[in-house]
Length: 128
Image (cartoon, rainbow, N blue to C red; front, top):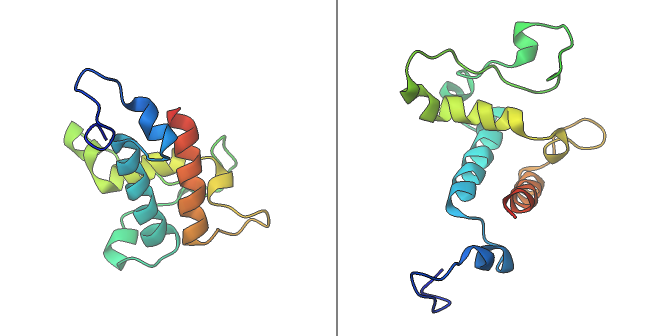
C-alpha cells in the first residue's frame, strides 16, 4: 500500500484501505477462512473429512438458547495451539457472525457469491 501510494514508512496508511475498499490483512485472513468454512461445512461442497469435524448445536441439544440458530460447538482444548486451527477458528468466527450475512429472508442459506459480498461489507464496516 505504501509503495503504490508513494508514502513513507512514517506515514499512516490505514485510511487508504478504506478509500480503496481493501480489507486489512487480519480481516482478509478471517474473510478467506469464513468463505472456505461456508463452502466446505455449511454448503457441503468441501471434503467430507473437513465437514465431519464440526458439530452443530442442533446435533447436541434441542432446547432454545441465546445462540439458537446454525451455530457450531467449539472443540474442547487443553493447549493454546488448537485455538489457531481451522477447526476452532472456523467455528468461533462463524458463531460471531450475525444471521443476516448467511441467511435469506425465507430462512435458507444465501449463495456463496452473496455470502462473500455480504461478509466483505460487514468486515469493511467493522474495520472502520
